Image (cartoon, protein in one colour):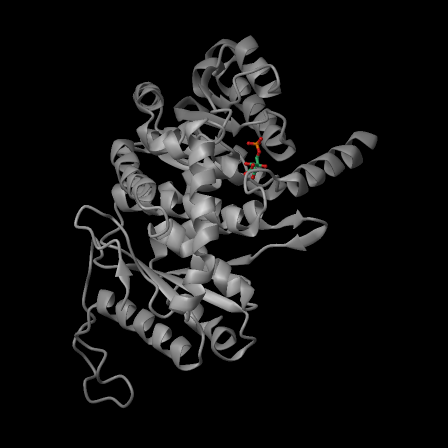
Length: 429
Ligand code: PA5
């Protein structure tokens, strides 16, 4: 079994022994992987891509912690407004770890029914708003922010409303949100220019809402730092490099659908975060040809009763990556009843953690017996450190994958095109 990165200091291991990638396959991609590593190191050391350095950015960390303390002292609740990369990372942290020093709500979709509910139920005297938009012009975010801000002003007055708002945006006049925040006197957290939205979870974008809710963001960064240090030290055998190589080689064999399947409710949003990262970074036009893997966010054991039939017996065009949580923060046992009942006699007395582990193991085994590849990322527990490690692992794996596929993982012309078109349609009326 090829479990790599079994380092006692690490918060994540990767078992790819069932990925159906041979030593010969691996050798065939070695040179490209070395070139990918060198190019990523160039992007890092020239500061062209800033996300590699985020785990070590002490200055932003301090700014985040200070502002979080201020906001916690004044308010009990915070509404986070943003979309895509300006939403999914913070949302993932909140769902996995939210400590509830402040409660958070995420409003992302311009759905009038959701907004109606938010407006009807918010006590503005106790509520802050963190509006997040790198560009400062995103339709959904700005429409929602304008609406919430107006309700806030009605409730607390123009002068007082300023205290309630934190704007996270590109600190330049290119961002309309920045201009507004400067005019109004809102607190501003600068979105790093060299970090794209979907790579921004470990920047002020994800860290501020996390810190406000009481998450220990230092530990989150410490976990991410272990993965990044390991990546820098190992040209082709770090977890992210190896993961990308496996997915790339699988794509060459026609397996271009990539399923991420955590076995934990608290990591469900992590799958949605990964889905955006993988899709927006890797679905691109290369030399006139449209290419890219399709990510699927599944989760166990729920999707064993929804998706696994397809993964086992449907087209052989997928890889599955499980995320296994070794030990749960809380566990309990099924009561020992109905021991003599047909079909369920064995259930009484089982621990729920053991049920989930067995189900994941069973699914892995079933996939293997159908000749379908899978890999498993294991974290010891859902903690700040392991979540930070997971974020960093998938961000850097995406960067390797972009290099292997020879696409720019850091732009999103397809998203920009959609934004432009919506603007054109709505500006007409
Ligand atoms: O990853 C990306 O770049 C996008 O998903 C953006 O995060 C998303 O479109 C929101 O953009 P902005 O932060 O400019 O409002």
